[in-house]
Image 1 (cartoon, rainbow, N blue to C red):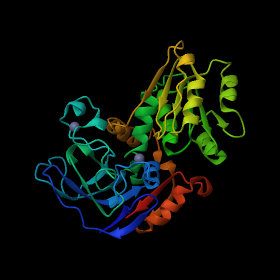
Image 2 (tube, protein in one colour; image 1 turned 90 degrees about the horizontal axis):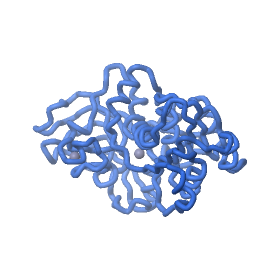
Image 3 (tube, helix red, strand yellow; image 1 turned 120 degrees about the vertical axis):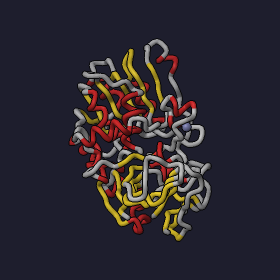
Length: 345
Ligand code: ZN
Ligand code: ZN
Protein backbone atom coordinates (compact mmCIF):
# COMPACT_ATOMS: atom_id res chain seq x y z
CA UNK A 1 0.00 0.00 0.00
CA UNK A 2 0.98 3.66 -0.21
CA UNK A 3 1.55 5.95 2.77
CA UNK A 4 2.77 9.47 3.56
CA UNK A 5 5.92 8.95 5.58
CA UNK A 6 7.90 11.38 7.75
CA UNK A 7 11.60 11.06 7.02
CA UNK A 8 13.04 13.58 9.45
CA UNK A 9 12.60 17.38 9.71
CA UNK A 10 11.43 18.91 6.43
CA UNK A 11 11.21 15.55 4.67
CA UNK A 12 8.13 13.59 3.68
CA UNK A 13 7.48 11.05 0.94
CA UNK A 14 4.54 9.17 -0.54
CA UNK A 15 5.98 5.66 -0.53
CA UNK A 16 5.15 1.99 -0.84
CA UNK A 17 4.83 0.41 2.59
CA UNK A 18 3.67 -2.92 3.97
CA UNK A 19 -0.09 -3.08 4.57
CA UNK A 20 -0.80 -3.21 8.32
CA UNK A 21 -2.11 -6.44 9.82
CA UNK A 22 -3.78 -7.42 13.10
CA UNK A 23 -1.21 -7.41 15.91
CA UNK A 24 -3.52 -7.69 18.92
CA UNK A 25 -7.02 -9.20 19.19
CA UNK A 26 -8.48 -5.71 19.87
CA UNK A 27 -7.08 -4.24 16.61
CA UNK A 28 -9.15 -3.17 13.63
CA UNK A 29 -7.67 -2.60 10.16
CA UNK A 30 -9.43 0.25 8.33
CA UNK A 31 -9.26 0.97 4.60
CA UNK A 32 -9.12 4.79 4.46
CA UNK A 33 -11.71 6.52 2.26
CA UNK A 34 -11.09 10.13 3.36
CA UNK A 35 -8.37 11.72 5.43
CA UNK A 36 -6.95 15.21 6.01
CA UNK A 37 -3.88 17.13 7.16
CA UNK A 38 -3.71 18.81 10.58
CA UNK A 39 -1.62 21.75 11.77
CA UNK A 40 0.00 19.21 14.09
CA UNK A 41 1.36 17.35 11.04
CA UNK A 42 3.09 20.58 9.97
CA UNK A 43 4.60 20.89 13.48
CA UNK A 44 5.88 17.30 13.18
CA UNK A 45 7.40 18.06 9.78
CA UNK A 46 9.23 21.05 11.24
CA UNK A 47 10.81 18.67 13.76
CA UNK A 48 8.84 20.10 16.73
CA UNK A 49 7.63 16.67 17.88
CA UNK A 50 10.77 14.56 18.38
CA UNK A 51 8.74 11.52 19.51
CA UNK A 52 7.84 11.07 15.84
CA UNK A 53 10.67 9.05 14.33
CA UNK A 54 11.68 8.76 10.67
CA UNK A 55 9.61 6.18 8.80
CA UNK A 56 6.38 7.03 10.65
CA UNK A 57 3.18 7.34 8.61
CA UNK A 58 1.53 10.65 9.55
CA UNK A 59 -2.16 11.50 10.09
CA UNK A 60 -4.66 11.08 12.92
CA UNK A 61 -7.96 11.95 11.23
CA UNK A 62 -10.18 10.18 8.74
CA UNK A 63 -13.03 7.91 7.83
CA UNK A 64 -12.92 4.50 6.19
CA UNK A 65 -14.32 1.00 5.91
CA UNK A 66 -13.42 -1.88 8.22
CA UNK A 67 -11.18 -4.32 6.37
CA UNK A 68 -10.35 -6.82 9.12
CA UNK A 69 -11.01 -7.19 12.86
CA UNK A 70 -9.12 -8.94 15.65
CA UNK A 71 -11.02 -11.75 17.38
CA UNK A 72 -11.76 -9.69 20.51
CA UNK A 73 -13.53 -6.92 18.54
CA UNK A 74 -17.29 -7.02 19.07
CA UNK A 75 -18.65 -3.69 17.79
CA UNK A 76 -17.38 -3.81 14.20
CA UNK A 77 -17.16 -6.24 11.30
CA UNK A 78 -15.59 -6.07 7.83
CA UNK A 79 -17.50 -3.68 5.56
CA UNK A 80 -18.65 -1.31 8.34
CA UNK A 81 -18.08 2.40 7.59
CA UNK A 82 -16.26 4.03 10.52
CA UNK A 83 -15.09 7.37 11.87
CA UNK A 84 -11.55 7.24 13.30
CA UNK A 85 -10.94 9.17 16.52
CA UNK A 86 -7.59 10.98 16.77
CA UNK A 87 -7.37 9.56 20.30
CA UNK A 88 -7.02 5.82 20.89
CA UNK A 89 -8.55 4.51 24.11
CA UNK A 90 -8.83 1.11 25.76
CA UNK A 91 -12.02 2.05 27.65
CA UNK A 92 -10.85 0.12 30.71
CA UNK A 93 -7.98 1.95 32.44
CA UNK A 94 -8.44 4.46 35.27
CA UNK A 95 -8.27 7.49 32.96
CA UNK A 96 -10.63 5.95 30.39
CA UNK A 97 -13.09 5.21 33.22
CA UNK A 98 -13.33 8.95 33.83
CA UNK A 99 -13.54 9.70 30.09
CA UNK A 100 -10.04 11.19 30.08
CA UNK A 101 -9.20 9.20 26.96
CA UNK A 102 -6.35 11.61 26.12
CA UNK A 103 -4.46 9.92 28.95
CA UNK A 104 -5.42 6.30 28.32
CA UNK A 105 -2.61 4.13 29.72
CA UNK A 106 -2.54 2.17 26.44
CA UNK A 107 -3.55 4.89 23.99
CA UNK A 108 -4.07 8.65 23.89
CA UNK A 109 -2.75 10.49 20.86
CA UNK A 110 -0.63 7.76 19.28
CA UNK A 111 -1.87 7.75 15.64
CA UNK A 112 0.63 9.38 13.30
CA UNK A 113 2.75 10.04 16.39
CA UNK A 114 3.90 6.84 18.11
CA UNK A 115 2.31 4.39 15.66
CA UNK A 116 1.52 4.65 11.93
CA UNK A 117 -1.37 6.99 11.11
CA UNK A 118 -4.19 7.62 8.68
CA UNK A 119 -2.46 9.29 5.72
CA UNK A 120 -2.26 5.92 4.01
CA UNK A 121 -4.44 3.44 2.16
CA UNK A 122 -4.83 1.32 5.33
CA UNK A 123 -4.37 1.97 9.03
CA UNK A 124 -4.29 -0.26 12.12
CA UNK A 125 -6.49 1.08 14.92
CA UNK A 126 -5.68 -0.39 18.36
CA UNK A 127 -8.63 -0.83 20.74
CA UNK A 128 -10.95 -0.54 17.77
CA UNK A 129 -14.16 -1.04 19.77
CA UNK A 130 -13.49 2.13 21.75
CA UNK A 131 -11.51 4.20 19.21
CA UNK A 132 -13.86 3.97 16.22
CA UNK A 133 -17.44 5.16 15.75
CA UNK A 134 -19.99 3.70 13.37
CA UNK A 135 -20.94 6.16 10.62
CA UNK A 136 -24.67 6.86 10.55
CA UNK A 137 -26.35 6.15 7.22
CA UNK A 138 -26.43 9.12 4.85
CA UNK A 139 -23.89 11.14 6.87
CA UNK A 140 -21.70 13.68 5.09
CA UNK A 141 -18.29 12.00 5.20
CA UNK A 142 -16.33 15.23 4.67
CA UNK A 143 -18.07 16.75 7.68
CA UNK A 144 -17.31 13.57 9.65
CA UNK A 145 -13.58 13.93 9.05
CA UNK A 146 -13.82 17.18 11.04
CA UNK A 147 -15.08 15.06 13.97
CA UNK A 148 -11.85 13.04 14.20
CA UNK A 149 -9.96 15.87 15.89
CA UNK A 150 -10.72 19.55 15.30
CA UNK A 151 -14.39 19.67 16.32
CA UNK A 152 -13.97 17.74 19.62
CA UNK A 153 -10.78 19.74 20.30
CA UNK A 154 -12.60 23.05 19.81
CA UNK A 155 -15.58 21.95 21.87
CA UNK A 156 -13.79 20.22 24.77
CA UNK A 157 -10.64 22.31 25.22
CA UNK A 158 -11.99 25.67 24.01
CA UNK A 159 -15.70 25.84 24.77
CA UNK A 160 -16.24 23.40 27.64
CA UNK A 161 -12.99 24.07 29.52
CA UNK A 162 -13.64 27.79 28.90
CA UNK A 163 -17.14 27.38 30.40
CA UNK A 164 -18.91 29.38 27.69
CA UNK A 165 -22.41 30.32 28.88
CA UNK A 166 -25.49 31.88 27.27
CA UNK A 167 -25.01 35.60 26.76
CA UNK A 168 -21.23 35.55 27.31
CA UNK A 169 -18.83 37.72 25.36
CA UNK A 170 -16.09 35.46 24.09
CA UNK A 171 -12.95 36.07 22.04
CA UNK A 172 -11.32 33.40 19.90
CA UNK A 173 -7.69 34.24 19.12
CA UNK A 174 -6.74 32.38 15.94
CA UNK A 175 -9.08 31.65 13.03
CA UNK A 176 -7.46 28.46 11.75
CA UNK A 177 -9.34 25.13 11.60
CA UNK A 178 -9.36 24.66 15.39
CA UNK A 179 -10.33 28.29 16.07
CA UNK A 180 -13.15 27.88 13.55
CA UNK A 181 -14.23 24.69 15.34
CA UNK A 182 -14.37 26.66 18.58
CA UNK A 183 -16.47 29.24 16.74
CA UNK A 184 -18.93 26.61 15.46
CA UNK A 185 -19.26 24.65 18.71
CA UNK A 186 -19.41 27.71 20.99
CA UNK A 187 -22.73 28.51 19.35
CA UNK A 188 -24.28 25.43 21.05
CA UNK A 189 -24.14 27.60 24.20
CA UNK A 190 -25.49 30.85 22.69
CA UNK A 191 -22.76 33.33 23.60
CA UNK A 192 -23.98 36.90 23.09
CA UNK A 193 -20.93 38.12 21.32
CA UNK A 194 -18.16 36.22 19.53
CA UNK A 195 -15.04 38.25 18.71
CA UNK A 196 -12.73 36.52 16.23
CA UNK A 197 -9.08 37.62 16.22
CA UNK A 198 -6.60 36.80 13.43
CA UNK A 199 -4.04 38.37 11.10
CA UNK A 200 -5.67 37.13 7.90
CA UNK A 201 -8.61 39.25 6.64
CA UNK A 202 -9.88 36.36 4.49
CA UNK A 203 -10.17 34.09 7.53
CA UNK A 204 -11.93 36.84 9.48
CA UNK A 205 -14.42 37.25 6.64
CA UNK A 206 -15.10 33.50 6.73
CA UNK A 207 -15.49 33.69 10.52
CA UNK A 208 -18.25 36.26 10.06
CA UNK A 209 -20.06 33.86 7.72
CA UNK A 210 -19.73 31.16 10.41
CA UNK A 211 -21.26 33.28 13.16
CA UNK A 212 -18.63 35.67 14.54
CA UNK A 213 -20.30 38.94 15.58
CA UNK A 214 -17.08 41.00 15.56
CA UNK A 215 -13.60 40.64 14.11
CA UNK A 216 -10.23 42.12 15.06
CA UNK A 217 -7.35 42.05 12.60
CA UNK A 218 -4.05 41.71 14.44
CA UNK A 219 -1.38 43.74 12.68
CA UNK A 220 -3.65 46.50 11.45
CA UNK A 221 -5.07 47.21 14.92
CA UNK A 222 -4.02 46.64 18.53
CA UNK A 223 -6.11 43.62 19.50
CA UNK A 224 -6.01 44.21 23.27
CA UNK A 225 -6.86 47.89 23.01
CA UNK A 226 -9.69 47.26 20.56
CA UNK A 227 -11.27 44.42 22.56
CA UNK A 228 -11.08 46.39 25.81
CA UNK A 229 -12.76 49.33 24.06
CA UNK A 230 -15.43 47.03 22.59
CA UNK A 231 -16.24 45.68 26.06
CA UNK A 232 -16.32 49.05 27.90
CA UNK A 233 -13.01 48.24 29.55
CA UNK A 234 -14.34 45.03 31.14
CA UNK A 235 -12.74 42.43 28.90
CA UNK A 236 -14.28 39.16 27.76
CA UNK A 237 -15.91 36.39 29.77
CA UNK A 238 -13.93 33.74 27.91
CA UNK A 239 -10.65 34.24 26.00
CA UNK A 240 -9.77 31.20 23.88
CA UNK A 241 -6.24 30.78 22.55
CA UNK A 242 -6.15 28.75 19.31
CA UNK A 243 -2.68 29.37 17.86
CA UNK A 244 0.01 28.18 20.30
CA UNK A 245 2.50 31.07 20.43
CA UNK A 246 3.36 33.45 23.32
CA UNK A 247 1.84 36.53 21.59
CA UNK A 248 -1.63 35.01 21.30
CA UNK A 249 -1.62 33.68 24.86
CA UNK A 250 -0.59 37.17 25.97
CA UNK A 251 -3.62 38.71 24.22
CA UNK A 252 -5.85 36.25 26.08
CA UNK A 253 -4.44 36.99 29.54
CA UNK A 254 -4.81 40.73 28.89
CA UNK A 255 -8.44 40.65 27.69
CA UNK A 256 -9.96 38.25 30.22
CA UNK A 257 -12.48 39.95 32.50
CA UNK A 258 -12.69 39.52 36.28
CA UNK A 259 -14.32 36.16 36.94
CA UNK A 260 -13.53 35.00 33.42
CA UNK A 261 -11.75 32.07 31.81
CA UNK A 262 -8.70 31.69 29.62
CA UNK A 263 -8.91 28.44 27.67
CA UNK A 264 -5.70 27.53 25.92
CA UNK A 265 -6.22 25.22 22.94
CA UNK A 266 -3.01 25.91 21.00
CA UNK A 267 -0.03 23.55 20.97
CA UNK A 268 2.91 25.46 22.50
CA UNK A 269 6.58 24.76 21.85
CA UNK A 270 8.06 27.56 23.97
CA UNK A 271 7.28 29.02 27.44
CA UNK A 272 4.86 31.93 27.82
CA UNK A 273 5.06 34.74 30.35
CA UNK A 274 2.19 34.41 32.82
CA UNK A 275 1.29 37.81 34.32
CA UNK A 276 0.23 36.42 37.66
CA UNK A 277 1.02 39.80 39.28
CA UNK A 278 -2.02 41.19 37.44
CA UNK A 279 -4.16 38.07 37.26
CA UNK A 280 -4.05 36.86 40.88
CA UNK A 281 -6.70 39.37 41.93
CA UNK A 282 -9.07 38.73 39.02
CA UNK A 283 -10.76 35.44 40.06
CA UNK A 284 -10.06 33.80 36.74
CA UNK A 285 -9.42 30.26 35.58
CA UNK A 286 -6.82 29.16 33.08
CA UNK A 287 -7.30 25.78 31.43
CA UNK A 288 -5.46 23.71 28.84
CA UNK A 289 -5.17 20.14 27.66
CA UNK A 290 -5.33 17.49 25.00
CA UNK A 291 -8.66 16.48 23.50
CA UNK A 292 -10.22 13.29 24.89
CA UNK A 293 -12.86 13.01 22.13
CA UNK A 294 -15.43 12.13 24.80
CA UNK A 295 -17.80 14.56 23.04
CA UNK A 296 -17.67 12.69 19.72
CA UNK A 297 -21.00 10.85 20.30
CA UNK A 298 -22.66 14.20 21.05
CA UNK A 299 -21.09 15.83 17.98
CA UNK A 300 -22.33 12.93 15.83
CA UNK A 301 -25.86 13.64 17.07
CA UNK A 302 -25.62 17.38 16.44
CA UNK A 303 -24.27 16.72 12.96
CA UNK A 304 -27.05 14.24 12.24
CA UNK A 305 -29.64 16.72 13.47
CA UNK A 306 -28.25 19.51 11.28
CA UNK A 307 -27.33 21.65 14.31
CA UNK A 308 -23.78 22.17 13.07
CA UNK A 309 -22.09 21.88 9.67
CA UNK A 310 -18.34 21.38 9.98
CA UNK A 311 -18.23 20.34 6.32
CA UNK A 312 -18.05 24.02 5.46
CA UNK A 313 -14.50 24.11 6.82
CA UNK A 314 -13.37 22.08 3.79
CA UNK A 315 -11.87 24.36 1.13
CA UNK A 316 -9.74 21.99 -0.98
CA UNK A 317 -10.00 18.41 -2.20
CA UNK A 318 -7.30 16.13 -3.59
CA UNK A 319 -6.88 12.48 -4.53
CA UNK A 320 -4.98 10.68 -1.74
CA UNK A 321 -2.02 10.01 -4.06
CA UNK A 322 -1.71 13.80 -4.57
CA UNK A 323 -1.10 14.31 -0.85
CA UNK A 324 2.26 16.01 -1.44
CA UNK A 325 0.39 18.72 -3.41
CA UNK A 326 -2.18 18.93 -0.61
CA UNK A 327 0.60 19.54 1.93
CA UNK A 328 1.88 22.35 -0.29
CA UNK A 329 -1.54 24.03 -0.27
CA UNK A 330 -2.25 23.45 3.45
CA UNK A 331 1.26 24.58 4.38
CA UNK A 332 0.62 27.90 2.58
CA UNK A 333 -2.89 28.35 3.92
CA UNK A 334 -3.02 32.17 3.78
CA UNK A 335 -1.79 32.35 0.18
CA UNK A 336 -4.04 29.48 -0.92
CA UNK A 337 -7.04 30.57 1.20
CA UNK A 338 -7.07 27.04 2.62
CA UNK A 339 -8.84 25.91 5.78
CA UNK A 340 -9.19 22.10 5.69
CA UNK A 341 -8.15 19.85 2.81
CA UNK A 342 -9.83 16.51 2.12
CA UNK A 343 -7.91 13.62 0.58
CA UNK A 344 -10.08 11.07 -1.20
CA UNK A 345 -8.81 7.51 -1.53
ZN1 ZN B 1 -4.95 17.17 14.60
ZN1 ZN C 1 -7.53 3.45 28.63
